Image 1 (tube, one colour):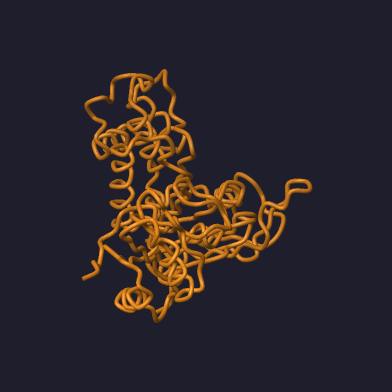
Image 2: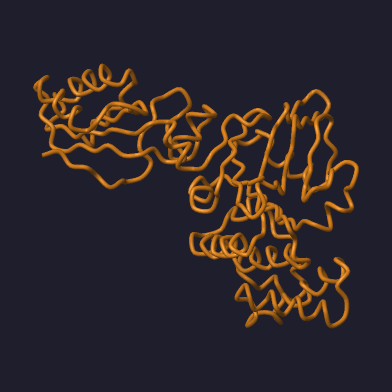
Length: 335
């Protein structure tokens, strides 16, 4: 079966004077999927979105959105897409209903058709009760949902979400995630840029990691995690045993163990193949290291991101240091 791509770029380049923002970026997003575009600040994510949404022209390569060339057919691209930027673009002096009716008119939906579409979206995003209050009185999460609704006025084939949950609390983020999942289930293609690794893990069918203007890795979230390996952590009976545990784990993995003297733990990234928790425990026992607990878990997407970009992520170690766990995991306990 032939795959049809809603977004396709080949060798995409963009220069801003001496700054080389994109360096031959390739991207392929199948129709009806959610693609998470990840990367550190300055990696080129927003530049990609601006090119794909016809807001800026590439200086090299080509890009197709909904089958239309972004350079040769920008008007056709705009008719096929919806865009939600990093910050809510709604007018705080207008009510929610007035905002959506304004967007409808700008999109060519006038009269009853525009009013009906605005009311439909207010209901869909749980905003109907607040629809006739000025948007300036709404919470940040409500304004972001209104902004997302505005991007859907024309029922776009492709929706671009550029860091849509920046600054939102967990409950508001969950509301946006629910809306995005529903759109994908209905067949809308979504390209999502985000700094929240959990967001990509929860929403994306495929992830593209961008660093220094290039795609450095592509795959499903689980597939990318599998490439990194796993993370082993052992808890020892006292501080005197920490160094011995580190020596054993270093020998077994070739990594650089991370010692936490307060928690009495030693952790290390484990190669993708071959090393099991029972073997780790046996080797520690042979070395006379008293272990009270041990676990072996998959890496988080944060750790994958760090390993691929060598860039610090909130809650993870600095680049160049061993990866440490960023969240509790289900444990396989030592006997």
